[in-house]
Amino acid sequence: MVSQFELQVPIYNAAGCKCTTKEDLNNIASSSAGAIQTKSCTLAKRSGNQPPKYWDNGTISINSNGLENEGYQFYLDYANEYSQSINASNQKPIILSVAGLSLDDNTKIITDTLKNNSIYALELNLSCPNIGGIPVSSDVEVFNEYLNNIISATSYNHSAKPIGLKLPVYTTRWHFEKVSHLVNKYDISFITCSNSMPNCLQFEHINNPGEDIMTSKPVILNKLGGGGGGEFMKGIVLGQIYQFRNQLSENVKIVMCGGIRYGMDCYEGQLAGANYFQVGTQYMVEGTSCFDRI
Ligand code: SIN
Image (cartoon, rainbow, N blue to C red; front, side):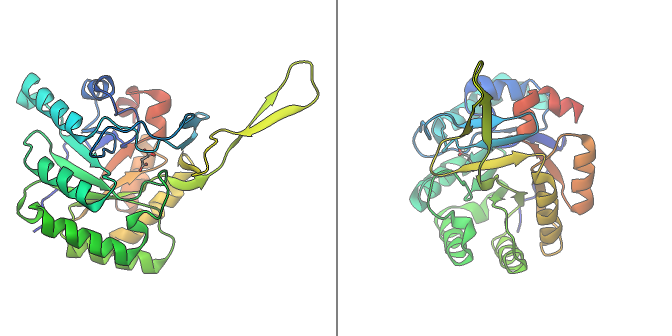
């Protein structure tokens, strides 16, 4: 039985965007976002990739964060503290984004999180484009086995906590069919479409005063490339939502993540089949006022 993923206010932050530190999370807590989603966390604290890790020009972004986070226990402790300090009727649901580096790590994080009453839901991120290797969710056979192992090793099937999957961008009908089958088969409560677009490259050009030659360099100098987000992702993400909506069971919710800047973008997401909306680049650019405005 799928645990229903239900939010009263449908717009909140994408994992990865200003949601790593206590201060970040407190800012979201005091905004009009419908939920507080944490940075994708690992078993232990990580400092991630070498800087620069993030760039945007106001409408598109590139990130190569490399899962910099405080370690999952920090986020569970934050959730406990939050739920004890805020009147229950004013509390926002907290969604833990989980990106353990191995099956064992994910099993441990999920097992402990399912026991934590202050976390409302988990978003399992098996699609990070910034840590090298092939993301688990890009290979359907591997993905199937991975989910099967996680579900047998944890009490997920007996938990009332919704668990969702943050998916990468897929480009073939075959992938939509196979991944939908897995989501239906493993009673996944929601999917998030999509993680950032892997391997994006953006140059910046600097005019040196008094010289005829400009200097050009990639905004993120990292062999692993950078995940692209922002305006250009909207059409890509709408297509993902539309394809999945046609193949997923009705009770599986779809969260749109990519290219949301205005309320109209959410409306188009709804037309394609989305139920909820995460804001990434626009939240980085505008801050928490975007949740109110959108
Ligand atoms: C990162 O930490 O590099 C981003 C995480 C993600 O987008 O999956």
